[in-house]
Length: 171
Image (cartoon, rainbow, N blue to C red):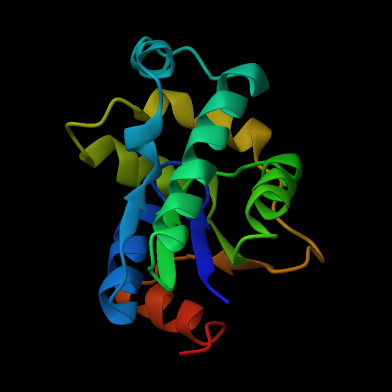
């Protein structure tokens, strides 16, 4: 069966970096979840306005359909970056994709101050550091969810996080 691997967490945890490392290692496509946000969502975040559940449902639907299209198009595996902060978002992803491909979800998390410092140094991203609190307000770190793994980033380098995640993936 095909599989879809999601890498999530609050902004600034390195989900895109880790997803790219995974897609290279697994020799499979990578879908950058941020590229699927409708312009209205990007405009809101650019203005410092947090997204609501209503804003996220359409985006999650489009993102799941994109992942399904990749595996139905013949790819065995696809890696997707997606915040998936709340359990209900992760449940939706598993329910939407689960009949068409195996899913594995990895939620990266860290303490607020570490991520905030990291976000202050990045440029060219619409999600600014001042928006991080809203993501932490929404974050539900997984506890005992099927096919969902939590990965504490701490001060680990991306390569260390990548190796930790590989332990859960059957190559």
